[in-house]
Image (cartoon, rainbow, N blue to C red; front, side):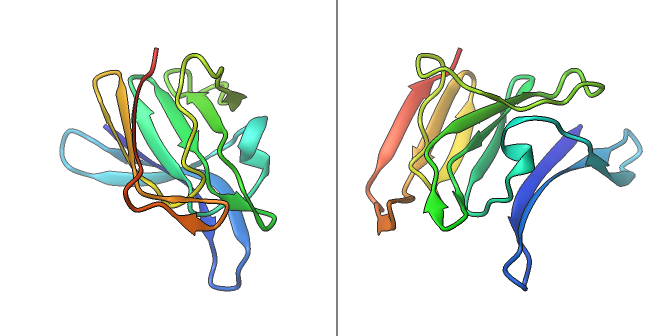
Length: 133
């Protein structure tokens, strides 16, 4: 059982691009590990993004970096921890993000996104549901 945490912002305002993994063993013990990443947004610090796990893939959606909002979706296969590399999703297989600060959840192969901002405008009534393949 693993929990993933990506990026964020420090108190100083520095944007982070790291990926931390919390592993829970069968006895309830926990350990944190910083993963080494290549490609994609792993090289770009961001905040206000969403990260969720859908089957064996992490989906990083939206966020803000370098003063701009991003509505792209990046994927990371976490079933092969020896070669963690971000790659962009294809428009036909995953939904676009609402840009930043949306709530997200995955149920089965469906991704639900609620609220968020786009170009700085809050969209509290925005709801998107997409089938991810």
